[in-house]
Length: 86
Image (cartoon, rainbow, N blue to C red; front, side, top):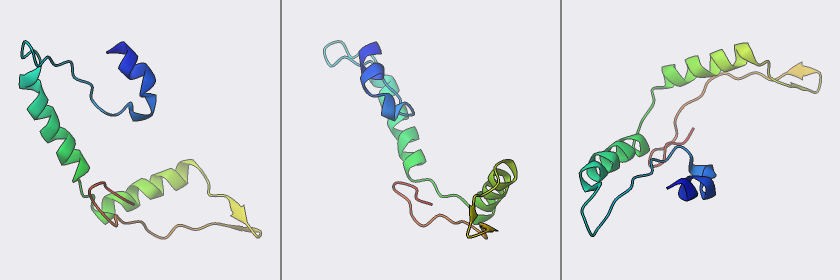
């Protein structure tokens, strides 16, 4: 398992399960994990929550200046699911 985590560092957010087809070890945990991952994959986020997140990010890190003017962000919204897109 440690080798899998080391090789796949770019998917550190993905759960890693130890399972055995021979003994059945870990099978009971597999389907709840699949359900959880699918719910995250299908998630929708309200525009108000995303705008609050954008506002907090802009407050903490000022946007860059382009042609002597600071960039302005007006709003954000989710444009798709499966996978969630912003």
